[in-house]
Length: 354
Ligand code: SF4
Image (tube, rainbow, N blue to C red; front, side):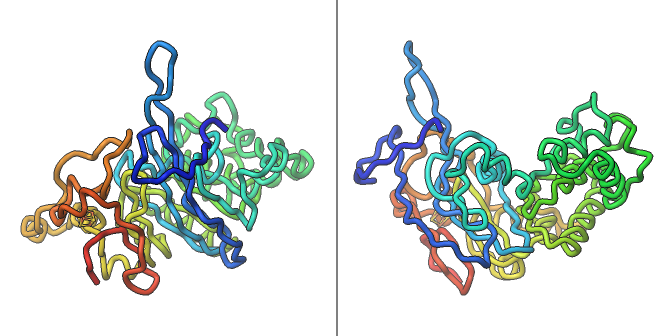
């Protein structure tokens, strides 16, 4: 684990090289399949003749949320906000964490040995953004879907073949497709194959990492409906990563908005759309086009202006301050904490809004 360091130094004296792992451990609550507590993932930046660490890309900077079984949490934000890194860090797919806790069914996944982690992999799966890139072009579809079952020694060969056929039918393909190669399929069909591969090992929790953004609009809703149907039948829990608030609204029970490695708003889906509190969430919503051209023309200009600041050694204060039309002097000095502004609705902003 490359860069886990603990320190008790005063945060006010923090330097770009200091990592504060200052979380208070949480107790397991069985209603949650996943509990994420102040999770951090930093990537070191090397420089100089001896390749010293000169700073960090703070891709995930202390996010906290809990996910109930059988529900979906949408994780939304612009490109580069850290949402994909968050998903991969939660699954322990990107080396070590930098700080915080990830409890899956009460078990800290970063405490597991490689053997234990391997066993747990069947329960935690990921569906990737680009179905073309995530499927090995030299393998048949049947072998791709069966691979996870083989690795985890699930079933005998005959049962695995039978299961491949069942899974193909579950995702709307058919058994004849098992002998074909990924390039023979459309983008939507390839994503269905990716979903079948994830389901093969009987997971409980699936990170869907922008699973529809590489697909035509006409296909997107088919994949979303398929994921929803599968959830109803099998009780899956999803973390659905996306940049499109419209899609997230349709599939999510709860929504978390992420900006520059931080969660800035977290609430139930209906609540966050009815009472959008954080200026960044408001800007994301304002940027969703309205199909009516007259209404679109009348729409208030998006509040998003300025550049996304660098996640390398960020300045103190609110990470959104350089783009926020409400920013005050306090915003440039003090980082707002995530607080409960309405029942079950958390926001990280100094503004007193309801
Ligand atoms: Fe804007 Fe200040 Fe709120 Fe940050 S804390 S979102 S800068 S008003």
